[in-house]
Length: 381
Image (cartoon, rainbow, N blue to C red; front, side, top):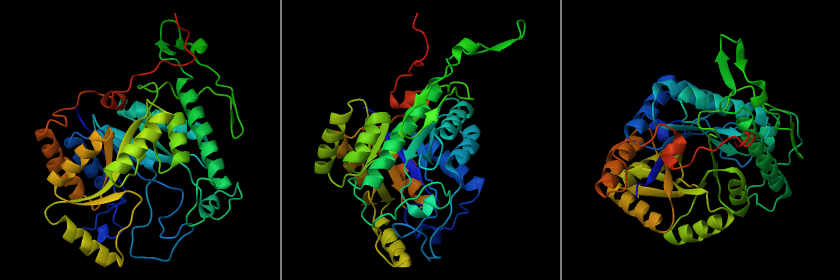
């Protein structure tokens, strides 16, 4: 069975000192185009693009005063739209936060990405819990985020409830145009069939959205929704509205426990594991060098792997036997660790019959084995 592989792209890599080894121009289209082209050459399922509503920081809430780490990002949805025409098969999954952002805007942005990519769009839905980020908008009073904010925190629970509604609004907007609503019949002068555009009339605690969308139904019907989750509350959020969840186990034993818990919430949710990876015969030495440059050993929510492609393949297949269906790998340093993934790791997995030799589908839903849903508003005949 083919293993699903994705990579999470962020600046110069997931190690904060990675930019000092081979400093890329992280604010150039050429840099990002090269990364995504490499991922597509490796036949990966998709790439995710990190984003947030505040600068990167070592503090739990607010900006720090460090000048030796990458700060700043492109808008992930706009960047994905730029990359879509220069790729042909790989999925593009930008991060877009739902806190402070209207779901109508997110929905049409992701729908547009699906159109310009020919059906390869996804969305990593994310909350924005920090008071420092709320101050960029001035609409909400948000308490400072505690260093170890727990899912029982009322503020965090409210944000996830709002996010659940936001995803539901987006999904309804994607359905608000039926597939054949656009006619473009010059002879009759009819561009659309107005009966096939639908009000969604969503009225909830956080949003009241009339609809319909201003963007025709995406080629996939529903772009792929994904979410990162570490505990029960975000698991529930993913189960309520996502197609794919990224989890962060640190052992095969944890994999089994997480898979059992998440599967109990949704049997249809695809479960991917996140790993920060440094690959190659000198991976441990490279990581140690970066740790030294940064002044501290790298820590992460996800497990950190440093070793050869063969050793990583062993780990991935062990975790697959424990129930994981795919992996979102976070390259420690770009482009080096990405190239190790796309060239060495994929070759190792292919030799074991666990990875594809060619893309099997033209859409992201097709690659992931997800059916294309009908519009919920279409009349069944």
